Image 1: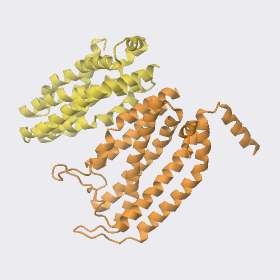
Image 2: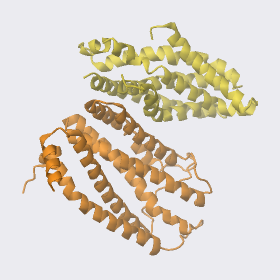
Image 3: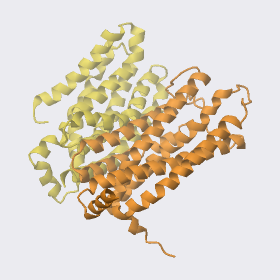
Image 4: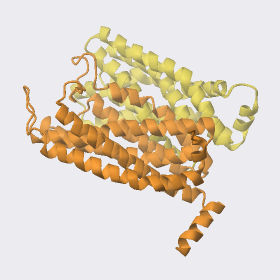
Amino acid sequence: MKINWFKYSSPATFYTLAGRLIPWFAAVAALLTLAGLYWGFFETPDRLGGSNPQKEYYRIIFLHVPAAWLSMWLYVVLAGWSAVGLVFNTRLSYMMAVATAPTGAIFTFIALWTGSFWGRTSWGTWWDWDPRLTSELILLFLYIGYMALHSAIDDVRRADRSSALLALVGLVCIPIIFWSINCPDPNQCAALHQRSSLDRIDPNILWAMLVTTLGLWAYSFAVVFARARGVILTREAEAQWVRDLIAAEAKA
Amino acid sequence: MRRRTDVLTTLFFFIIVVSLFPLGVGTEKETLRILGPGVVWVAALLASMLALERLFAADYDDGTLEQMLLTAQPPALLVLAKVTAHWLLTGLPLVFIAPLIGLQYQLPGEAQWIMMVSLLIGTPVLSLIGAIGAALTLGLRGGGILLSLLILPLYIPVLVYGAGAVTVSMIDLADTQPYLSLLGAFLLLALTLSPLATGAALRIALE
């Protein structure tokens, strides 16, 4: 069976498709997030071994790491939709980009906020100007810049295209954030944030973390689709299919 | 950049901002030496940004910019010319005034040389990155404040390595080389990519 993907690049068809998908994503999100957090909070060891044992508070990891991953991933998604929009000039791509930005910004904020709590208990400080923390803060500024530029321009077409270009320029930061914890020589860059240790992590903890990540990812799908539906309705308010839709809603 | 004040305001803004810090944080020699490199670089970022708003604005208002984009020349070339003019009027003066600022902050002689070199390599990067923001916010209400929101996060690497070079030069002069090399790498990267992005942004703003 061959699916014509371009069919869904029309806002009208996508609106219906997204409406049908949102409940599924929302259900998966609730299920996986709750399962992952339950697993993380109750089925993992109370303290981690090693020379500097982490006690109960290490469980912030089950929210902190998924949020940090998604904050970066959603920026890539945002830049991806922006690039598709600039290349193929499809309206829906820009709408998706606009709908993705707030969710990405919130995950960035959550990653910083939970990290701050973890830092207070583990390092004894709320904030440190370590490369990882600083670059994540810059990511938050990039999201805010994107949203500020988009809302400052009245002409929708120019707003879409200008902020898409800004998103692509900001993409240079993603590899920097990604590699900022894997500094080759720890003596060269004074990093407080621990290096990535996914290969050495206890599978029990890793799986709880991955399940929460999938849950939050599904949440992003649900929220972004819902927001995109709102954007579509606002922008296409004059189109016939929206009028038909409103008339049908009013009757029901 | 059609009036003499355009050059002088930026320069004096830089000097005044830099002169305010010792009055706020105290005038001990040790404190000033620690603060100096960072303060000079932050002031340079702000001064460079202050003049960015006018980079394309006058040409945009009277339609010249549209005419220039209609010519057969690639927009990147036009952008490069505008950015060069911006740097000559706002970046280069900072390089020459830097030794004077260095004296205010009690910096040793070598550190002053390194400060001049780092500003010489770093300020063109500021103009190049800033041009993207100036083109994106062209003709917007409150464009100036928005411009700072878009551009300042992208200025951070230049600030870190520019100020870092000066700080390190006070410890060991040989250690400054990687900092200056990285600044040079930023310059090359910005020189190749920024005119293209700015040209695209100008086309979006003018269509």
